[in-house]
Length: 384
Image (cartoon, rainbow, N blue to C red; front, side, top):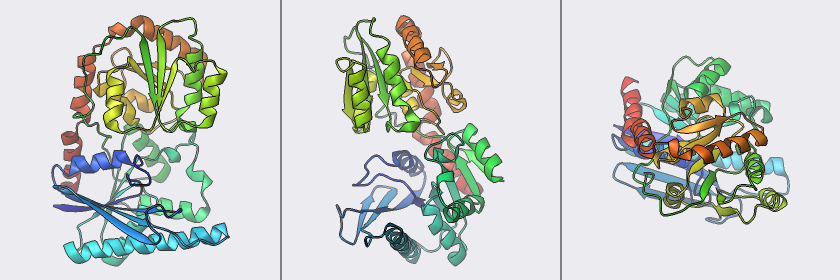
C-alpha cells in the first residue's frame, strides 16, 4: 500500500519545528506502508529560492517532498495574497499530478490539517475522483481560541467547511476535540488517533545529583500557552530557595521584560528553540513540566515529559483529563489564576517524591508509541 499525504504544516528549512507532530505521524505510519508527503511552503523573503525549489528526502518507506516558492510581490497586500494563493495552488496541483503520473491514481489521499492542503484534495476529488481522509490538529476551531477560524473571511471559511464535510472520514487527536468538531460540522465518520512520542528519544534516566527543584515550560509562547501566568506564579515562590525554571521555545520580548519585572532573571533560564534530542535531556533532568494552556486539542509536550518519567502540572482543561490522572502522572490547577498555580507549585515541591517515574514512563510509552499509532492509521486505510 502506498499513500499520498498532503500536509498543511510540516518541518522545513524555513520552519524546522512547524508540524513536527505530523511528521511523527508519518514516521509511525511508514512502519507499515509507503508514505509520500507533499508540503508547499511560501518563502516570502527568498531565503531558499527566488522562484521554486523542490527538496526530496527519501527514507526506507517515507518520502518527504517540500516545495518552496517565492511569491510575486507588488506594493498592494491583497493583490500579493491573491497572486501567492494562485502560485500555491498551481504548484500543489502540479506536484499531485506528477505523483499520479508516476504511481497511478491513489485509492485515497490523506490530508493533514484542512487549510490549505485540503484545497488540493478538493481539486483532486473533482479531477480524479479520489476521496480523501482528513486528520485535524488545529486548535483555532475552538470557541475560546485566538487566533480563531472566525477571524477569516467568508470565502475562506466556506472552503474550510467544505474540506471538512467532504472528507470520507476525519480523525482527531483527542476525544474532546472530536466531539467538538462533530457538533460544529455535523461530521458523520470520525475516529480518534492521538499524537505520538518518540520513545527512542524521550525515556527516563537517573537524575544527576541536583538538590534544586527544576520546573520546565516548553511551548510556542503564544497567547494559547499563557506563559506569562506561569512566570507570575513562579514569581510568587521567592521565599522558597533552590527552585528554578527553564523556558524552551521562541521567547519574545514581552516575556523577557516580564522576567525582569518579576525579578526572577537569576532563577529562570531561557533556552530558545532546540531539537527534541536536547529537549529530552532537559526533561530527563527536570522535576516537572508546566503547561498552563488556555485551550488545546492535545498537548504533545505532555506525553514527551511523561515518557521521560516527568509529572506534569496543567490547567484544568477537559482535553488534558484524557492524558493526565491527578496524583499519578500530574496535577491539575484551575486556569487563569497565577495565585492558584503558585499554590500548586508549592504543593508539588512538598510532594514531588510521590510520583513513580518508571510507571509514568511505561504507561506513556504503551499508549503513545509509534507502532500503536501507525497501526491505527493503517487499520483505517484498510477499512476504507
